[in-house]
Length: 150
Image (tube, rainbow, N blue to C red; front, side, top):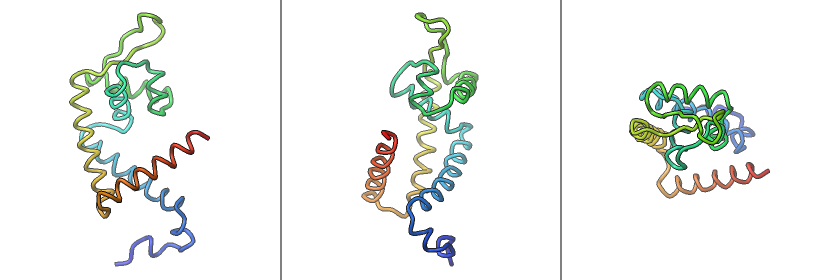
């Protein structure tokens, strides 16, 4: 069977930028489907993960930590609050600001999302042995860190 890569001009397939773009489209679909199976979206995972790791945060802080636009943060927090996964309360030091807290139900949902994302990682990286997976993750982290500093 001939793959799409084999039908693509070599000058494209030899470029990491093209390969990363193609993989990004594929992984976005995998992640969207994986989270969809548990009734969630990627933004939900970002917010729940940030709250779990860093604790109570303002909506603005969550936007910065999760690299999300303010309106997307508000919409995602509204959805998470409706499902009981987060609680939003006024900041006692600044009533104009809301503080967001992870609930027990949110912690359970985060664990469900972790498992869904683990399955996506296994699907995406299936052809690679564990050592290559670690190397790929290290290299991608190095590239991302470099370009975020710029």
